[in-house]
Structure formats: structure tokens, C-alpha cells
Image (cartoon, rainbow, N blue to C red):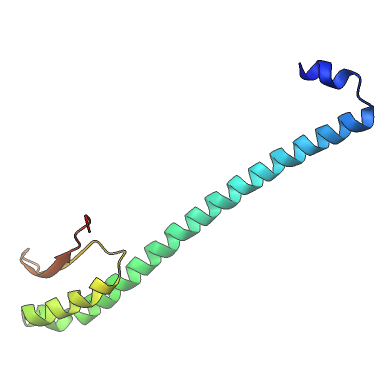
Length: 108
């Protein structure tokens, strides 16, 4: 069908169509590469942000862990509630006892 449509067209029209199709394909490939790169960068940024939050939380909870102070441990964890991307957070002692924590209700 395409062959029949192009048979009686001038060569300039055929070349223009070939160039247009090539450019459209190239633009599609570039768009896919950019979207993939953006997704990868977004994941890396989220991973870095989470690592920094973990380090800051660990630093801020050292005294509460050293003195087994559940109240201050909970205050440290409560400061993370403002970050909507966090679903759960907890401070756990070395023997496995959870001193403080929260779990966001995902149905809300």
C-alpha cells in the first residue's frame, strides 16, 4: 500500500519522507534515553537523601540509645513524620527491642 502511494511521487517528496521518518525515530530514541536517565538520577537522589536522613537520625539518637531513653528516641523518630515519603521508621536496640517508631497509615 505504501509502495503504491509513493510510486508516482517526485524523488524530493520521497527523500523528505525518509528524512522525516529518520528524524522521528531518532527523536524517539533520544526521548527514551533522556527519560531513562532522569529516572535513574531520581532514584539515585532518593537513595542519597535517605542515606543522609539515616545518618542524621543515627547521630541524633545516640544519647537516647546509650541511656535507653524511650521518650527522646520517640521525639527523634517523630521528627521524621513530616517527610511524607517515609512509610516507617524505628529505633531498635542491639538486642532487638524497639524503643521508638512509627508506621504511616497508607490507606489515608
